[in-house]
Length: 106
Image 1 (tube, one colour):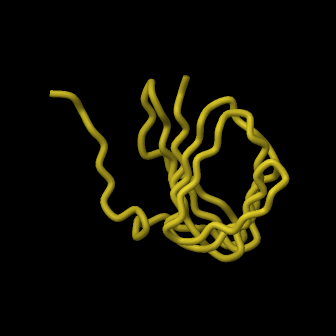
Image 2: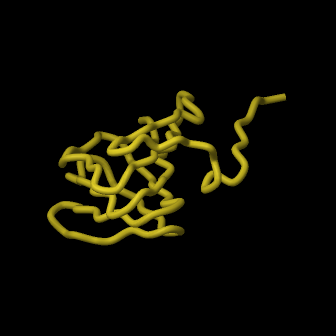
């Protein structure tokens, strides 16, 4: 029987976000994908970068300002995002929040 990974209620997952910090926890890492839970305190950011893989983000709590290829959008609890390979992107937490990042491996 194949193995599986199950995580109940990710929004309530006990991820201790440090003051003025960022934390991450890998939930699964297979040949096909990597799933990582992130927690950001208000004001924390990721500067512009890109990745050669498809990326999926599920926003679990908080509000984030995203810059995607120069376009600004706001992501809130419950929002979902797909980013194609090589899309320049950046992120700023407007308040404390969490999101799930799934990177699909080639």
